[in-house]
Length: 133
View 1 (cartoon, rainbow, N blue to C red):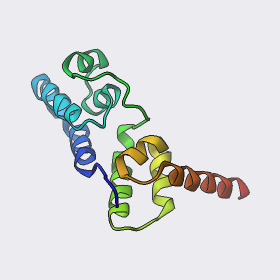
View 2: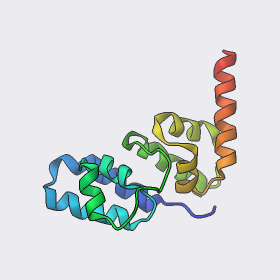
View 3: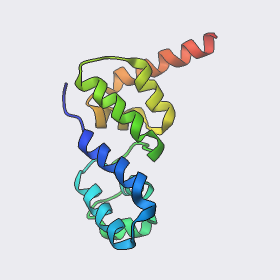
């Protein structure tokens, strides 16, 4: 499988799961660390850390144009898709479940290494099946 970002997504999931227990200094340090992965936007980082976007904008050296939707609730599903793709398994239902949990096809492709066209096709097929029911 091509490049994936499992360590980055695992890090984001850990930060999101534990951020409520951390002080501001720890949150700022985690925001910087998340920015270093180079795959998350400032908006993503703010959502994962619970910091206001203005604070994240002030502590990262990046513009907020990484692109693609990635809600914290989708992180565990994205991890499932990455693990599936690393094992060369193509299970469209797992990818569609990730999309429905709050990640865009563009962002899912970026994080997993799966072709965005494939992810979009799987989603269209799932929608067509749902509409046929």
